[in-house]
Amino acid sequence: MSNELNPANHAEYSEIISIIERARENAFRAVNRELISMYWKIGNYVSDKIKKDGWGKSVVKDFSQYIQSQFLGIRGFSPQNIWRMKQFYETYCDNEKLSTLSREISWSNNKHPFSSVFRQTGLHRKSEKNHLAIRTRQRVPQHLVLRG
Image 1: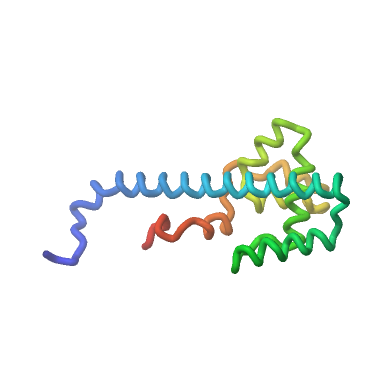
Image 2: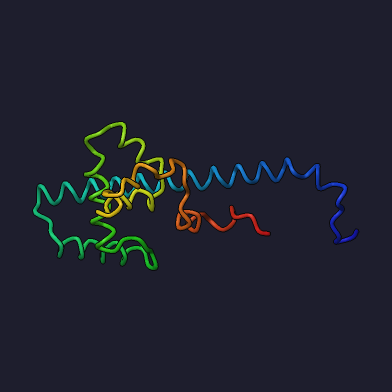
């Protein structure tokens, strides 16, 4: 048996390549939905704690350190990101349509509306609905990633 590729079969394999590509994109979208849902819930939690228990910067910093101590090497839970999660929740929580839509776009696209420059230029309206951030792709388990 030869290790050389048989070009005659390549056309037949394209259907399998399409199946693999669709599965990868579906996996990226599923990971993105779960991450956004998690950020929404954390934002809700922090927002409630600020209102009810008077949480402030020092408690959020402690909360961030606690999360990072529980999951060694985890990224994305700095105090600044936790404040962004709170902003994310508070920005969309009172509008059911935007709340639903905000969970369909990547976290990177959701963070932009919190930038005053981004809001002033109207770019927040131009975010692609199904854009998948590079960081989201990097979080997909490696066995799902197609190797070249």
